[in-house]
Image (cartoon, rainbow, N blue to C red; front, side, top):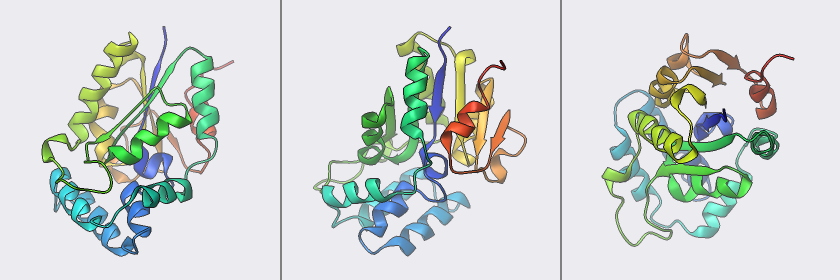
Length: 210
């Protein structure tokens, strides 16, 4: 049976950073984005409010800014190699993130079968963000279920990779999970833990022995 590998983005594929911070850095607004990340991680705002505030912060955002943020972000090593190997094995890989869809979806070009983020309007913004399109921890599970149907697998065939509170619900419903450079929210939840900057090493933890 094929397996479905589900990857978080912020703090997981990105080492020590998030897509909003990398985007905001291009606008000279890194400190403001870090403050937003802190507010959501501490539960002072929810994902829809986070998205509305980020949208306001990015009033001057252009596609060139997003490209620079993506290309300059602190990605883990060997992401594309891992996804190529997953495809070679006949398995599937997808990214499911609370970060903006216009950033997350660029990972299709790196070999992901699917990439889902919070729905934002096209850049540059000419319309508001719709809070109904903003993802949450629970939404990650719903998307995972849709992907299972699409790829002909079940939750029992899934492996999740994540680092924080937004991954807790997904980790709770799949049999195998990898906490990647994770915070306290995943303590005791993951079947494997990895600290480092090479996705291949995290991927090796879930490979059958021998």
